[in-house]
Length: 184
Image 1 (cartoon, rainbow, N blue to C red):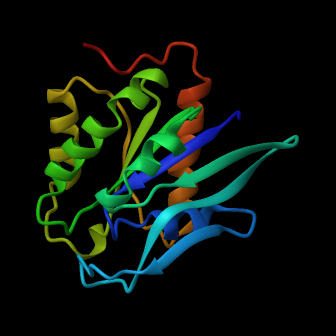
Image 2: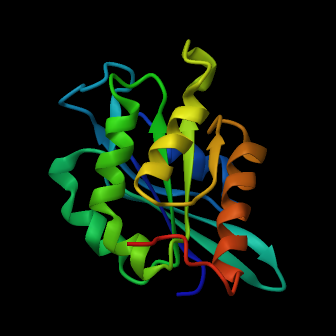
């Protein structure tokens, strides 16, 4: 499947909202009651996937697959990642340890990032309620430390333009002939 994009991140990072905002079609979701209530913010959580499409013109589409955020559903991460051409990792800026969350998702999805030639973006969400004015700088520094050069965006997942800007950036990376952002 051409233009298959994985959108991942922790519970409450905005995956379902991002796909709903960006999709040109009705979103298929598998939300269920969140019995763990890990963050206390949402009464629902994705248990399998979210799916939507973004029309690119001339009949082309970007297929958006959102992963579940809870580790107990991590078996879906590998299933959904099969054949993906890129990944968007959403990190909640209000998390107890957003850089730790970034490290976790970079590790879990390192194989996918390698297979995609480093075609990845980081979206930092909930920046409107954080007091950390240096968060972009901190994320870019961490990415530099792990030798990964990918775009970092502040994203309000409720705003269609924010999400689409991030996704179009990801698409432009996948179409670039010289994209080899991951180096070891």
